[in-house]
Image (tube, rainbow, N blue to C red; front, side, top):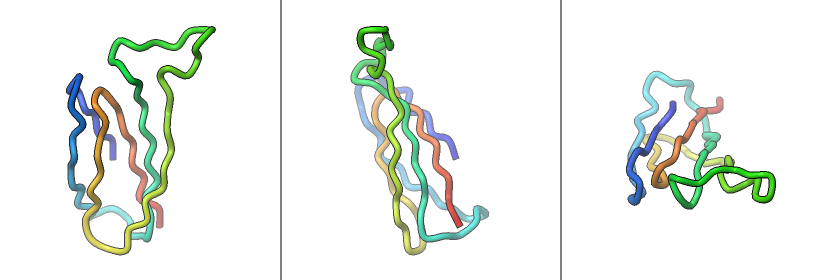
Length: 79
């Protein structure tokens, strides 16, 4: 699942219903983002725009996540 938050200033909270995806106890989450939608990586500051990785343990049911402003998030439901 890929989620794009196009809002420049507001984080968005959403609930994902994983029906039809493999069920499991965890989800791997990667988010590409920065402090500003105008941010770019440079030689001096190569990590202004970066990917953060997290693992979410979910027992059953829906998954609620917060998606940072101006970000792209990929979610992999691991078996």
